Image (cartoon, rainbow, N blue to C red):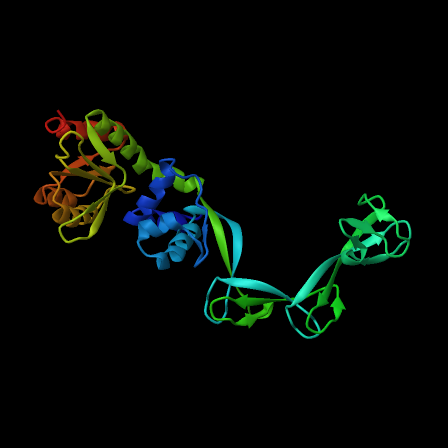
Length: 328
């Protein structure tokens, strides 16, 4: 993968929605993302819809992650859509090549091996038995005394017979009939996390997993990621939310920010905007491997507890000193 793609992935990892999505893979909650078929809309990705909050954004979101090498994709299915109204509720009609009617009856062709007579199964049928109309012998063993020689169709409207029907498509929503030439196809994929992205993105997750375990041992109920509704009514995402199980108090929120060299002040600003609405008792930002001077100043100004850490041990050590008073 090129350096350009690596840089693009680095930018994507800063996106809060991408972080939430990748956490599903990194935590082992999912190993692959498969589409789910919906009778009304066709294939969908409900998990991604829930994260993004808008089904219309799912396709572009997954495409961006696949194009930059965050996700690997494998073709799962192709869905047919109506070219007139865009509906996925499309059925197939097999039509008479002469009058174009789809009122067609299909029958199996049978060949009696002994005498060579070939006709439709209906002509051989006598009650529950198959009897050759020519020599009147009963046929009992397929592959021994008779063979299936294909299919034969008869149009119930014009009465003509033929071996190959002409397919067309019928939209159940707008009742438009169309052929293969006009059909709209859409590819749907199974997505897995690429090895490169797993290695790059897991740095932040390796921080989150031991912090969650640490908080749980201290009697906190922990969500990773956590969703909290603020005073404004908006829902906010944090890498970790936790509160005391016994009292449902001491709400804390934690975000993790990563960078190649140093984290900028932007994650501090983003965290402050959320905690201003949610009003937790404590807010923490873990900066990997460190944060710039503007970030440090803003963290102090916004009462955000800052932990700079190069690895999970340093992160836990930094948090332990902060938590010692509230996690007793």
